[in-house]
Amino acid sequence: MDKFIIHGGKNLRGTVNISGAKNASLALMPATLLASGKYELANTPVLRDVVTMSKLLQSMGVTVERAEHTLHINTFRVNKFEAPYEHVKKMRASIYVLGPLVARYGKAKVSLPGGCAWGPRPVNLHLEALKELGAKIELDRGYIIAKAKRLKAARIVFNISSVGATGNTLMAAVLAKGTTRIENAAMEPEITNLAEMLVSMGAKIDGIGTPTLEIEGVDALHPANISTIPDRIEAGTILVAGAMCHGKIRVENCEPSHLSALTARLEDAGMKLTIGSSFIELHAPKEILPVDVATAPYPGFPTDMQAQWIALMALAKGSSTVTDTIYFDRFKHVPELIRLGAKIELNENAAIVKGVKKLIGAKVMSTDLRASAALILAGLCAEGETEVLRVYHLDRGYEAIEKKLQKLGANIKRVAGEEF
Ligand code: EPZ
Image 1 (spheres, rainbow, N blue to C red):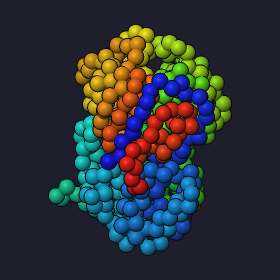
Image 2 (image 1 turned 45 degrees about the vertical axis):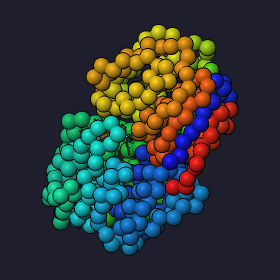
Image 3 (image 1 turned 180 degrees about the horizontal axis):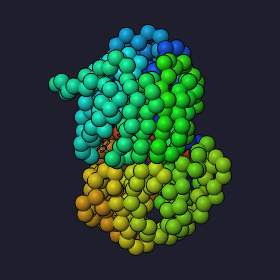
Image 4 (image 1 turned 30 degrees about the vertical axis):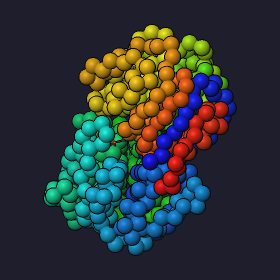
């Protein structure tokens, strides 16, 4: 098992290039199932989750080859329409193959995703939407069995905003007969990136980037090339590292407009930001001001930045409340941060954080991707040595995070590294 050894206290200085967005790649890759042929997905990050999705597609007969940061995908010979449990249990996003398989091949057998570190993660919205589009859905021994001669248009109104359900429904509707309307659709940039790819494949989609999507189904799509958007959560994580470590840092190759909620809160916390067309510069003052935050669907404050924000508030001059309205139990990082000296009380889906003068390094355990990120950030500014165990969680969603942080002057090293 990999671990990171961090010696805290370095003030971060320098520039980091942001990688492509994990949550965009995990939607763009299965979208290639919608039309046979060759695709190039540029700016695809080197991540464990991308490897997992590649292996899942390869198990269906798809060829996936990587050249630098471009994936060359060929869907000429798709001959299996299944996402087995061993893939899905590793990564919930495997369910993204469901919509395309049913739309293009009329059948799919996809394992129900297990829970994750912080609790159950239902897929009812995905299944209800596919049923409204005319798919026959059965559950059989932990598998979703979906069948459809040809999907037909429907008006789908999501009662909650769901990134995955929006993505799956979009990939199903593009080949459905008639015009489908999706209301209360997720507006995350990753869904916009997916919609743009589908349009370049010949899909007809109106309302991209708004909560209402109108999709005029077509009989067939064709392959296309796409570039993956920058990872707004990686960019946000690095900015918070700078904020915690009295940094003077710059994140390059990012899309600042995808981070407005975070940059606004960073300014409220006293950070001096310079925002360009594709970079954000952050100069951190000595004092971090307490700022209450509640997560919300895009363009609100992202739940994927909640753990990192708690780490920042642990060092603020005063108390703050961090509420997660998306996942009520996504707080596995709190007990570990407390082991580093943070003062945090949990009250249902809110963390009340009382800022302390300093954190003290200790051995801590990663439990999930963003919780691990929060522990790394805390270790970077804690006094002494922090050991973060099970960093394979980080490798799922951050490309070479320790190299990026070392570039900023952080004293962090990976021990007993393993290729994935
Ligand atoms: C995506 O997950 C992201 N993953 C998550 O990022 C992110 O935290 C989440 O969106 C919210 O922004 C990928 O894009 C691969 P949802 P997803 O459906 O699609 C409930 C990371 O760290 N819900 O938008 O699974 C759900 O329980 C990961 O990169 C249902 O009730 O999230 C949650 O409360 C973690 N029924 C809310 O909706 C459903 O059928 C939003 O979840 C689906 C979701």
